[in-house]
Image 1 (cartoon, helix red, strand yellow):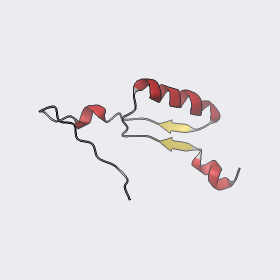
Image 2 (cartoon, rainbow, N blue to C red):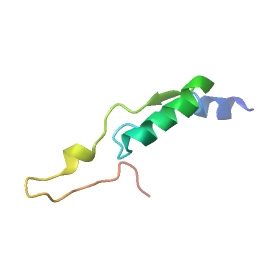
Image 3 (cartoon, rainbow, N blue to C red):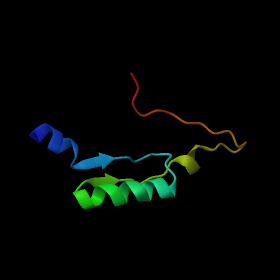
Length: 63
């Protein structure tokens, strides 16, 4: 494996996600034993609901 590919596998940043708890746990279970640091600090699903129940979602990276 090249140094660049190895660097990509050191850390996976999935902060501000909409993943369910079972999926988050599955990601950790699969990747952390392989030495990949997984950052799933904040689940944004609860932050995106307006007072009227409308859900707003935004992309963090786009074309």
